Length: 182
Image 1 (cartoon, rainbow, N blue to C red):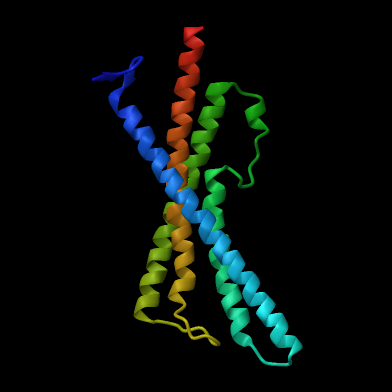
Image 2 (image 1 turned 45 degrees about the horizontal axis):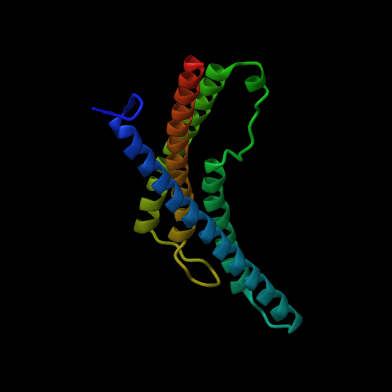
């Protein structure tokens, strides 16, 4: 079954689904990071005010640390979407389109493998944390939620790198098709 100018019928639906997932995750990550950063700022200001008033407040440091950790790990997944992680792209200047595509695939697949291994390890850690729960010293929250941030990051990052593989493949095929038509 064909759709349009020689495109498979599933391509349109697949890209719509990819864009929908991308939009949902993008908004989720942005708003979560914004809320966490706002909360982190509020807690830090509270800590400063309490320090000026000579009132002890160990809970503010602990809450700020938890918010900071979650913000970092959600931000890591968000950075994966836009390819903003540190990378060496000197090789891409020496190769043509196909070489850049291959490098992009190698990078994405190796990143997926890293995050799959990380998510597996974190699954084991989280299972252990459920069996032997630990509480934070000042607030008393379950440390499971602090470690959960790493697992969430790994899963979101895997999704983002899979999206990029699909996006890179579609771009490569469209560029190749455009060159063949010219």
